Structure formats: structure tokens, C-alpha cells
Image (cartoon, rainbow, N blue to C red):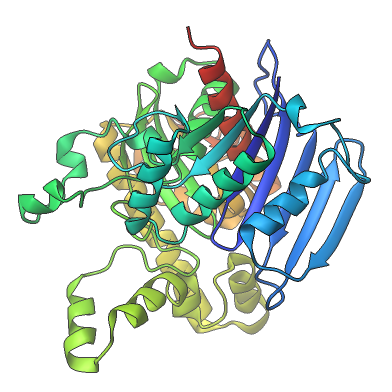
Length: 406
């Protein structure tokens, strides 16, 4: 069964084609075909990179920033040109889409209908950079794959069982009635890593108290019990919680009131600062990329870069502690995402502050950053894993499950 996955970012488009068949593999397989488009490199243009399972590649720059045009251009190369892997669009059985925000309406993945599309559009007020892009992906696929079922897989669904005392903000209750509540994000990644972590340890996910650390340019933690998220660090938007690459994470809201009243900042300026000019980038003045932060520390002894790293690790430990408290203990700590998977220093410094949990790392294994392995010391009371997250494969599996529902 061939399943196509579209994962739309605010200025990027990922597309993957998988062959899904029983028995389902524990590890995510390599896709039959993968395409990536990025329109942040050159003004008014998009760079398209495509590769199939045979190693045949295609890259070109096209003069458009229109997602429907870019998506159409990429999909045409599935059944034509040097990267062709299928004969015709009908060879694809289902199309899955990552949808960032499902609000409180969609607690599980669902087939796309006119009603679902309307809801995605309405929920764009909560995710203005992503839901419209996700909807464009759906509509572009509808033009090429008329009649094939499309599945909406929501990033918020994995957190939909969080209890009322976790999702309700301590403001006027009218906020909650207006939809202002904690939703959580990165749910597709947290869901994949929950299952994969249990597989690595040979355990049932329902038996584990797990804290999953998704650390990339965006960062969030999830406290997972009985296989479900019971708390997470992101909330109403992906801005809450941890310090991130360019996002502030949680701060005193009165700072914003002060900047408005005393410094004359408007909403647009504050939104840009909080999302694009804060976090590692804002504190260091160097970059939102941890690799460049570490380079500035090692080569230049840059004090602001050192401070940025110290804040990042401190707040990571702080929120891990919060998730452990929510769970009433911890069995597994998992690291994933670009930073979580590839930075031994961040993992080491985060875990150094958790010795009170009788957690300790195998120093050599941590330094090697092995994929999908336990890097805890033999006598550690908590297992520590590195998991390579596979959001696109998880979306494909959600499509498979819906196709095989009775």
C-alpha cells in the first residue's frame, strides 16, 4: 500500500512516499521517494531537491513561492522524469497531511472532508503560519489525486487526553470557553518516540513513565504515561515552554505589557521578537543554531554565547523536572530532534542536573550519539535513549490504521 505524506512548513514543503505493508517494521523504512522544497534561500524562488530509493536525484531552482505550484511541480516527478517511482497518480492509495492545529475538535486523525477543511481554516487563527500552509497542501493534492482518501494527522492530537487542570490557564474561565487553553504541539514526533522508545527497551508503552525531549529549532517536552501525553511544555501556541532557537519560551507576560506601554511596541513587533529574535539567537547575538553557538564558545570564548547555552540547559533541566513531577517519577528519558539527537554536550549537561533521580549516562556512548540506543550507564535507575524521530513515517502509519479500521 503506497501512502504519500505531505508535511508543510511556513516556508518549506516536505513530501515522502512510503510502501506500507504487514508486518509493520519497528524502525521507519527509507521512503520510496522524497522531495523537499525551501523558499527561504533566494528571494522569489524555491529550491527543489528530490531523491528516489534508487539514488537518482534531481535539484532545481524555480521562480515561484506559490506552494500549490511548488507542490504540483514536485509531485509530477513521482511519475515522470529521472526520479519516477510510480506509473500514475492512481498507484497511491492514500495521502496523509500533517496539520499543526486541530483545536479541541480533533482528538485523532481523520479523513479530510469539506467540514474538516473548514475547521482547519478556522483554526488558522491559532496557527496562522502553519494551518493555511497545511490546507494548501491538501488542496494541491486534491487536484492531482482526485478520489483518493486524504487523511489529516494533527500535531495536537497526541496531547488531547491531558486533564482539565493541565490544559486550563489560571485566567478568567471565559478564556477556556473561547478556546484559550493548552493544546501542545510536536505530538506526531512525541507519539513516534513513545512507541519507538518502548520497542528499543522491549517494553509495552503503557508500562512506562517517559519524558520525551524534542529539541530542534522548536523545542518541547512531553510527560507520557500509559502511552499518552499527560502534560507538555508548549501550550496555546508553540511559543510556551522551553528556550528555543529563535523563540523565547515562557516569560513573564508583564514584559510585553511594559514594552507596549513604556516603549511603544506594537503587536507585530512583539510577535516577531518573541518568535524570530529571541531564544538562543536573541541572547547570544550569534545564531539560533546551536552548532554556531558552540563554535562561538569554542573558538571565540563568546560570553553571550556561553550565557545562551547556560540558560538553554538550565531551562531544559527545569522543565524535565516539571514533567517528572507530573508523572510522579520517571522510567525513561528520551532525546530526539536535531539538537536532542546530535548534541552530546546538551544531553550530558541536562543529565548532570538529574543525578537526584539516580540517572547517569554512559559517557562513551553519549559522546558517540548512537541512533535508537540506550546511552544510560548500566547502573542508572532511569534509561536514557536517543531516538531518531520519524514524523513522516508516523503520519503514514496513521493513514494505514485508518485504512484498516473495521
